[in-house]
Length: 156
Image (cartoon, rainbow, N blue to C red; front, side, top):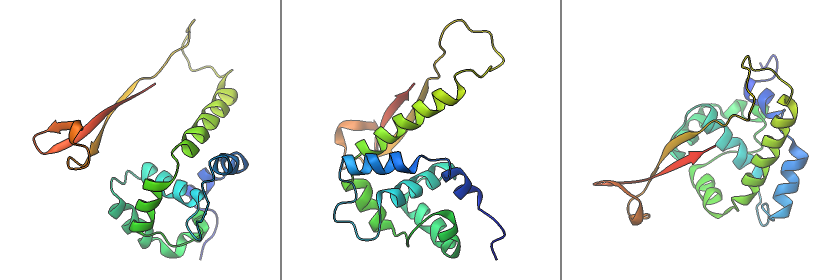
């Protein structure tokens, strides 16, 4: 029996759900969707990111293992690999881009006056470079190795 909130649902409670809904409505994200909403897709991808899941099969396997706990983790319905793949392929990426910008603005507002233990006169940026694996047959222009495709993503 559940004695309290799971850590994942506690983290997701900090999200600005009304602003997320506004982003979804702006791009008509839930149009003709019966069971798998944009928020469910966001939860799946956030779960995958936080738990280092690297494939749809791995995400599905882990969420199916937690089937009885999904409701308490804010998931509305069952997650299947094909549904998640279709959502990732067909949903407008700008929904999540706009929501990320909203979260960044909120973090800046919350931590603007915090001291990080360093005396800095100027703004500091963190630069990350990640390699994202791609399918060579779908992305022939992104040849990374002999039989592999990838792109390098630099984020600031």
